[in-house]
Image (cartoon, rainbow, N blue to C red; front, side, top):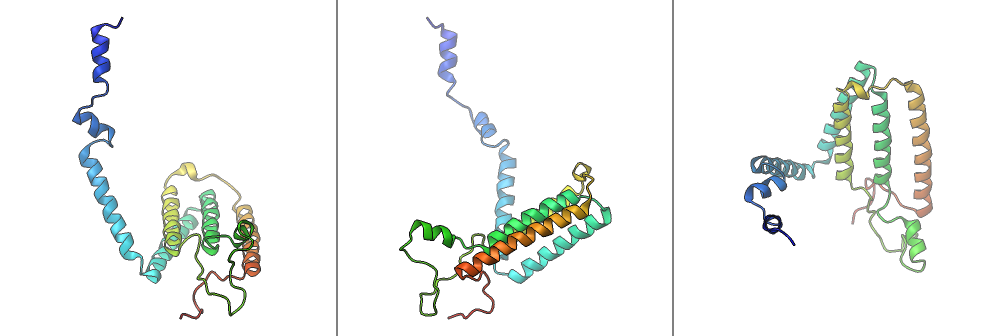
Length: 198
């Protein structure tokens, strides 16, 4: 048999006060509203920057140059730079790849529609797996994070950097060769400049 104190505590366990609700939903209401406001303002400026492709890439170039100068001056953080290089390579491959892999599409529906192979075939625009804006945003964010990491000595692992550079060049060459062969096999071009626009 249950005593009255245990039954009353069990009955009120499901009830929460306003203080409990504000604590459980993200802490102090002022801080959560401030974070939401900053996030909204940040997204607003990102949306405004979308059509300015050249200006965005110039800003990225400045950020990348600042990171490069910092690494050269410090003569360290080569592991951070190597990880950044691998991440940038993955982003670049996703940027060059079509959203739907033609090889997988052929396996799924062998008698269905495919990419046009003759001039008389239907035109289908190239849709990237990683859109240009997300590519730019991810690269810029990665360089900013890597730059911040250079202020913490724990990430400055001593390594022989020419080996890392050589390994990255080999990896880049092999990956790009595979990507170019894929483009040739399925006859798609991931770039829009120089193409006819109707």
